[in-house]
Length: 279
Image 1 (tube, rainbow, N blue to C red):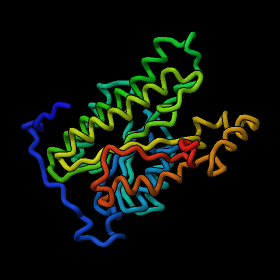
Image 2: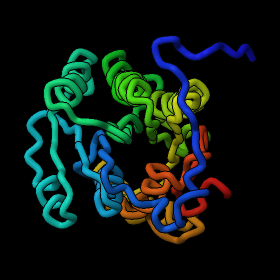
Image 3: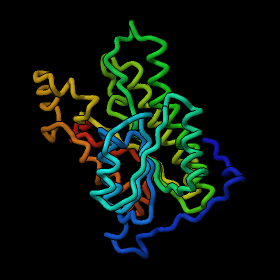
Image 4: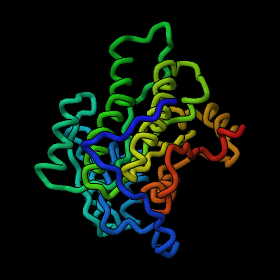
């Protein structure tokens, strides 16, 4: 493959091995860091946001406009970290640009970690009755928004010259074709390839980009499936860990990928699925 030099607007920076100078527990300490988590008010995003805050990071949650959840305030009170929420319609690139500008320029926040987590129900639509409107919305939320946020915050990280971390959420459906997931699955596969591209291009700026591949996780988006006892039992029977995953299962791996402990890990696919991918 062709290898191109880095963008001249953003000079390369050293990529140190912090393990040479830092004891192991301190490698996972996120004190002084700020992380942006899209969809951080619920589901997988809430587990990731909690892990980051408990490890010492301040957290910026990008939420659906008008979301009245008390989660940000509760997380701040429970962890002692600064947790704030910004309204943003991820269905609009203009709104994404406005929100990022508000965070970085208007409010002067410095962002070290970006977690692209927010999603919508993209499956259970038969391919023969899929609509342009639904397909385009799923594409916008699950790919275009991820790309644009990674570009904008990646530019911020590269300009600072201090490195950074980007964590994307893909899915097992990216690798296992499922009935009525003709849009969601291929888009999650695209997120995996985007992660590889970003890892290759941003590595010279000491920015690591990795992807998590969730399996069957009990979130509000999966509640109907959990409530279907017969279907839920079949799913659990196929999970080596023998249970549905929980948002809290993402705390540890998120802290690892957001911290200096993963400075030499980039372009990786990490399955958080109780072993389902191995079946």
